[in-house]
Image 1 (cartoon, helix red, strand yellow):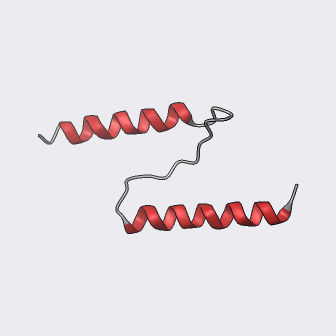
Image 2: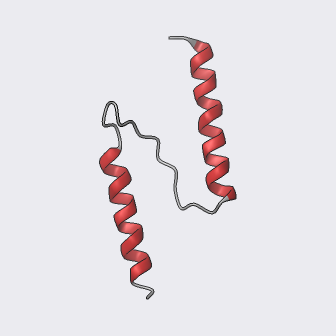
Length: 57
């Protein structure tokens, strides 16, 4: 494992988390289109949020 790359990844993850908070996004989920990791979770989260927001209309 390249520790330099791991350090960069942590920094990017922290940046994404801070960006999410600053812009009032509802969640941060790390995913990969290459491996498919957490793709279903992302769409599940989006669908649930849309249903929640629709119930307020």
